[in-house]
Image (cartoon, rainbow, N blue to C red):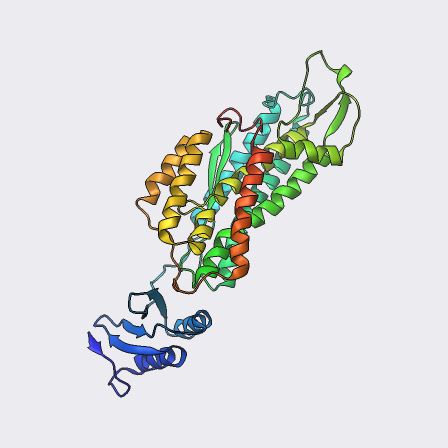
Length: 381
């Protein structure tokens, strides 16, 4: 490790990088490490560090370099390093998984109609053409929810100049659980806490918008049939407040009537899964979207506490496998940290952070609670 002086002998590229740092920050000492890393100790009192760091990243990226900013006992430390190499993105495996997920979801919808897994008195005597048509609509709805969720992450990555992978969809078991969602990985660290927050929030918000749209279409598709047209004791209806409220607005009725229909059944299942995915991802645990959101707003210590609290909530709700997975993985894989881990989260995002808790609680109380799709494996909290 050698000290760098203003007149020190360095390569042209290093000299450019050193000047770039000096132009943006008050530097107390500088060092060049043997591996090409440039290390700068910054004065404790700095102004507009967030904007300065972002402009530094833009300039360094032209040379294949990046920077990391951390807080120390003496002030702040900034290091200029090589960007990690990334291989060429291969779309073959994501396409195979996506195709397999389409098949799994289509078969799930087809089997639910063919064998009336909803126990719906109106799902009878459908033609093969209708079953295929409704199953295709089901695929479009469910994968639309999951796909737009991942697209939200992709857009946020693009806005903050981060490379990210193609989404990897995970096919499920038809007639049981059609898909286990999709994952997308960031190939670059977020530049700052604002970017980390946006990366976490963008997916759930985008997916939630499509989920609400699907729920409205489902409510508009219901059929109202007098209960006297069916055998005594025949009933149908969702137990969750949101769906009952939505149908009440879309299809106001009077008297004792059956609310059902094959399109409603499939779309109800699709948007219920969409709300469930949103709820889980908003939990402030580890690498979940809500974990990224919390990670941007609180200290690592508080984030660990929130992760354990989320795991306890999952156990209490009966989501044992998911709770165990998060508990196991959180101890093996560190949480995603931004390159600039010093600049605070913006004020507006701090407000949104609180609102994500309100949103998650509302989904849990009004959509997931008493939902017949989840009742078999969720405890009554």
